[in-house]
Length: 236
Image (cartoon, rainbow, N blue to C red):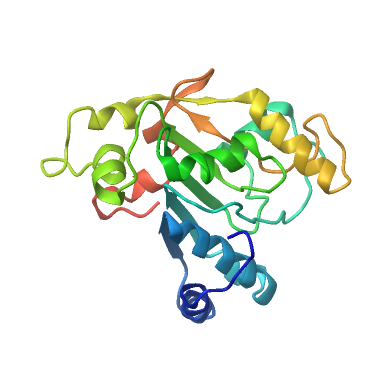
């Protein structure tokens, strides 16, 4: 990830995903990455953004778990003329306005003490603000473990009657909160790198959501998570 090396996994994924996105009969492409898969996705997206038009890239939705990626790109479609402080913090949560980014839905899920997340998703959205990490970040506070099924899906998106370990509903029913200070720091860092204005007025995406910090609009993870809306075969 540090050398931007296009491994065989990146090259193969790029070819397959590009072919699907170019198919006019395909209306939506959902990409899910776990651990190193987050790195592969971030590099593939970088290539696709330079090779395909917005009409193709707008089909994409991205969801990661325990991602080891150092960045996720998602260019602006336009710079809003007026963007309130609250809307800048909401990012993807603004349902009243059309998407302002090429990829309209990106969500990252992380366990607070997952070692990979500590130098992947969480480090790159909390510690290192120099890279853009587009998308909403959902953190399961106090949780550890890195396995996709055992430590993520079983607890975050349990299947009723099948995979419901103790505490499985705690994450989905927890109140979504926004770390406003961190959000504005990320936005200012991105604006500064781009030579734009600071103080939260750049219009760049800066959302981070965690069930343990300041309550914002009192929505639960179930209310906000787009991935949750795919449960039981549904399609948002």
